[in-house]
Length: 256
Image (tube, rainbow, N blue to C red; front, side, top):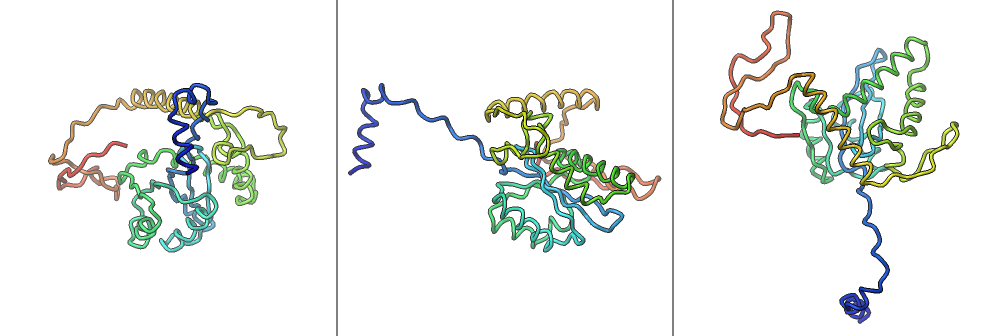
């Protein structure tokens, strides 16, 4: 009866005129769409598994000795137990990512596994950029003869608590809705709205696309399903051809 009364009151035009304004819509949920990749092997024999949230640009990582699908799932389970399960994850076509074990894990947890184009790292550009920054930090630690694991943690704290160049907001604030306390004085006294962050993100990406397209003299491909085309292959030596000798038939064309 209470629900019926409430519904009837909401349908009253006079009541609607004097009601308080509706609350704002909730912000979009971070940690929905992720990108991930392995960095390594390092001189120590370790690999670094890096995972990035496309929205907040938050970075999580794990140092791993083994990169098997079973070990990968262990790491992902631990990370997701903290942040929740994502909607999708974009990863390349490494053997552990295309394994039946990893496929089953994603299907069981309702995670969409998006694969990047083979031999085309730009297809997962966000994680590639983050890995370059991490690798640079590791090189600095190596040159200064410091413990690279400790330096990596210091880098993570600095990165997570600094405004991102694209969003203009701390990754920690976009993910957790709060600012991480560090030893630096806290001068951050405002909070960006979700629409502002997304607008700035879109604008930055559009400008970056225009610059990159002009620099690489990019043109739109006219390849369509049913066409025969040559596919790029790994170069074995300096005399290796750029493409496979046998053409491949295009089954589907996707845009990222």
